[in-house]
Each structure stands twice: as structure tokens, then as C-alpha cells.
Length: 284
Image 1: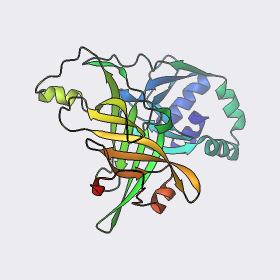
Image 2: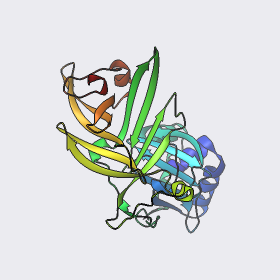
Image 3: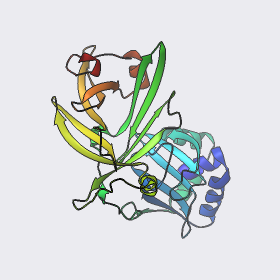
Image 4: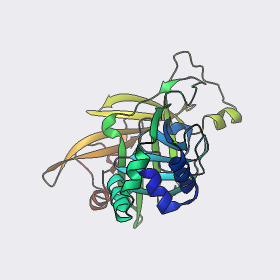
């Protein structure tokens, strides 16, 4: 479905892939998104679509029910972002274009290969990927008012990745891949510029409890000062409904810096709302 949809919508490398699939067969290979730098990293996997036996440059990621499409992708790169669609939107599009028979024929030629566990050899003190709690994974939105101007932020948590973007300070967004640290790791003091460049985008994750919340803390791989950033999923009663929120906090306690919600509309509605059971920095 995706190959057919993207070939018709975007053309280019996806059209070449469709032609190759019609003449032969296709392989969808699962990789870790941490091997790439996608604008929308999705839920921890990068899906490479290629003619069987070949290396592909057309990829997609998945976050919730939304697929994000790319072409011109190389390992450790990002490629060109083309657009997004849900499965239902793609299905409706194919039916509207009278391509259902073509879709059924192409679907028989697709093979799925999972290489997500072997695409990146871990080194430099990494003992494996840190798994983000399942209830935190997905997309969250926040809206905050500073000096009369509203800033919107988006947090996308994958299986081991965090993508954070806002419309004021970081419009392109930043992706951090979380790892667990080997017990025998020795911190270079101080790390060289080359070492700092090598671990750019790496984060150290760990879980802890504070003030009744289950926090996930994120620090830089070579970070020795400061407490990093912490996140926790919490439930608040809003207008008589139990609503999950994402608590974004920092500092030693930690103190709450902001709240994110599962929808942009809720974030706008609850902009800068303080909850009595949370500890904010400006409460001190």
C-alpha cells in the first residue's frame, strides 16, 4: 500500500521502487531509527523499502497511526521528508485512484526482514538501547506563553529515541537516542572534541521515583554536571475526566517546567495550567 501510495503522490524514487516491485519483488527491512536522523523518528523503527536484493533509499517511519515518508536516505542520514498519511488515508486514496487490484497484486510480492537488532554495533560504553516506558511513547504537545507570545513544542518518544521540536528556538527539532551504560565504562575527563562529536545525539537514560511520579531522566552521554531533563506520565482530573499528561521537569528535585498533552488542541486549552499536586520551579 505504501509503495503504491507514495509512487503516485510523490513520484521520484518511490516510482522507481514501484516499477521494480512490479517487475520483481519488494523487501521491507526494519532498522533502528537511531541509525538515522529522521525528522519524524516514529516509534523506534525505520522501514527500508527496496527491490529484493538491493539497498533502498526510500524509507518510512510510524508514529501512532501516522506514517512519515522519505527518499534519498543513507545510513546515518536523514533523506528528504516527503509527507505523511494514516493507513486509512492511504487506503481511501488507492480506492479513489482505482488501484485496488494493483495493490493486491503488489502485496503478494512483499517480504518483511527484521534487522533492527543488528544494524548498529554498540561501543564507547553503550551496553544496549535504553527502552522508554511504553506509556510515554508517542507524541505529546505543549503550549506556553512567554512575554505575550505562545511557543508550541512537540515531543515524540519512540522505543529508544526522543524527538523534540518547537516553533521558536528549535524549528528543525533534535533527536536523542537513549542508551544504557556498561558497568566498566570510564568517563574521559575531559572528553576531546572528537569524542564529543562522536556522542552527539546520544543520551543516558534511567528511571527513578520522586514525589509519587515515575520519572525517566535523560542526561548527555558525557554529562558530569547538572541533573539533566526528566519526564513522567501522570494522570490529572480535567473537567471531570482523567487525562494523561506528560510532566517535563529539571533540577535536583526535579521541578516541573512544563506540561504536554496528547493533542495540540488540549495543549492550547490548558496553556500554562498549574496542577496543585505537582511541584513547579516558581513555587519555591
